Image (cartoon, rainbow, N blue to C red; front, side, top):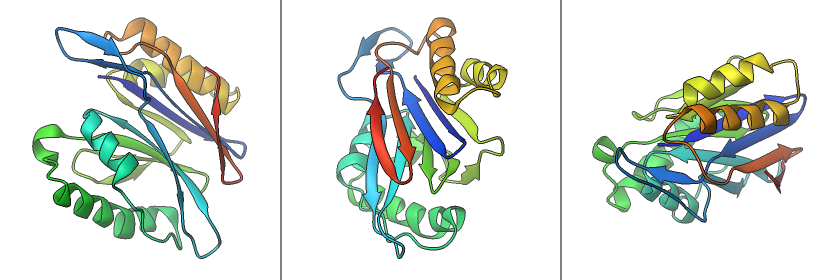
Length: 189
């Protein structure tokens, strides 16, 4: 259980997450966050991609250390569906990850857009430029909506803070990453 938020607004992408891992009986705070940053090859030069995962830490580890994204070209949505997801499926199979049992949901910011990859690996794009996944989703979405006229950073911070306050499975240190002009920076939370 967790909360991942992603906002893209005014040329700035912000992705944030908590650091708590939990189940119905216990919780713990972990040293590593649930956001993976990668630089991917592109026909136009290197592109930055932010991937925030919820559910299994194993999938996050595999994305962080075993996934080599294919060369990026064309439209972000089409690339995710036709190139990235097949590469992810291959990596999952090679590493023995059971997608049906262990599940996954994650958010992606790439090329000035915000996407959600659902448990069946379908890709959907956030129409309003922001979304969330994890057990704190509904609270985070409400907070971000209430602040939709503020900056991407303020929206993301409010989403995480509200989720931590109101959702049992969200807590610990928050991690925030900013992507602007294909440069990724970790922000102090």
